[in-house]
Amino acid sequence: MPPKFKFTKSEITQAALNLTREQGISALTARALAARLGCSVKPIFGLFKNMEEVQGGVLSEANKLYNSYLREDMSSGKYPVYKASGMGYIRFAKEERELFKLLFMRDRSSEEVEENREEIKPLIEMIMKNTGLSEEEAYIFHLEMWIYVHGIATMLATSYLNWDMEFISRTLTDGYMGLKHRYCGEGKE
Image 1 (cartoon, rainbow, N blue to C red):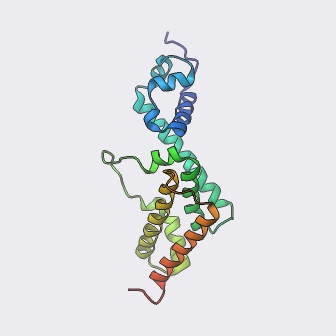
Image 2 (cartoon, rainbow, N blue to C red):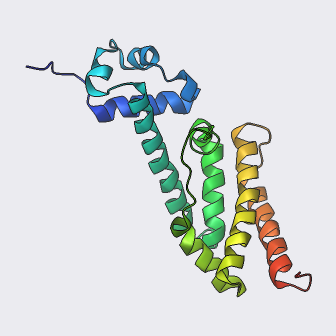
């Protein structure tokens, strides 16, 4: 009969997530996780094949948390929905620095990274509706805006700057209006 472990897979994943959120993914080792749980490494490896599987669970949970930030900001009504998606991304970077780095600043050279336009289709459709741009132009508009948003988020996550959310909101409005002028205004190429 296999041994009965005092921790569930979910409890171990949650402890690994909390360790990562506090100290970063490089701190997530079997020993550190076992110390966090107050046990040996045996329960961890009784439920997970290896630490890569634990890290996969952390990635999945971090992504769920990130998506909850987006949903919360996009449904709050505090900002227009498109802007709220950027504000949620930035707020996640500010409040969950290590998880943001894990999701959006890790080396992906060994990963198959696919562009998934379906995932951002609602955002593209919002831009099309608000600007009258074609789908392809709206997609490029979104990419340029996302680069701007990601830059701000990265600077917050790395403590390069510490802007308040009101200033960030004004900055995003300025960026959006500048792109809108570029694509829809007189200076259109």
